[in-house]
Image (cartoon, rainbow, N blue to C red; front, side):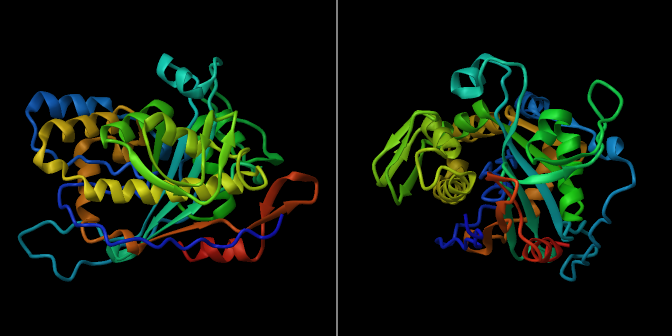
Length: 351
């Protein structure tokens, strides 16, 4: 396996929609459509949908430094300026095994879960651009000691797969592991599960994706000829999980498909005028909030809406998708390790 090069994404300029929170192409394209003027009961329901984890309290102060705030010169004296500091968000797509819907979509029949997709979303200071960095789940890392949900802490583990952090200690250990290998502070955490992702795609009326090669993967149950396809939620999820039916069957091939899907979803959201249909808007918002687990800093509609409003000027062609540079692990041809110094250089650029 050779070094995995950075993937730039071409794409048309997405329309600006002031009430649409695009945590989006940034967050597995879960453009959090939450600036909604709905009735009180609807607001309460959507707000109550969101689950959260207090990661800051669990991890304490022994973490990378926070980004410095950037003043907003154009903010009026009478209005509260929107946040403009650089922000890093760890976004995980989890193959949760809990719940009938997740099991039917491929989550299995056990009680565990894995971080099937991991992306660090960096939003530039001034909100002028964003970078989405995919971390291959097969990357061998040093997993730090983590607080465990059942109490106590885990021991440091060397040369283990990156996605074992979530399996062992959930969101808290996932965040601590990412901060350990990147030395970059994760300001927020967003997790989307199987059924929520599929529901989002269905609520948007599907998503159109062009594949460069035939896909024939019995594991993900996806069989597509090369070309353009309009996928429903279940098919889009299968595409995001496909690895054995493309390329060399590695996780790097799957990441390429996930980045393509993120782009397609961002464009689908931009092309769908949800504001003209309160019913569709509510359906999308319900699908998104019902699938989310966040840190306590993003666990309300008001917090998510504020983030979205600060991203109003960010367009699709200002979002760059890359993969952490890796090379084949000397200990296992089926695993990868960070390629240095390229990986450290990439993470340093996000501080």
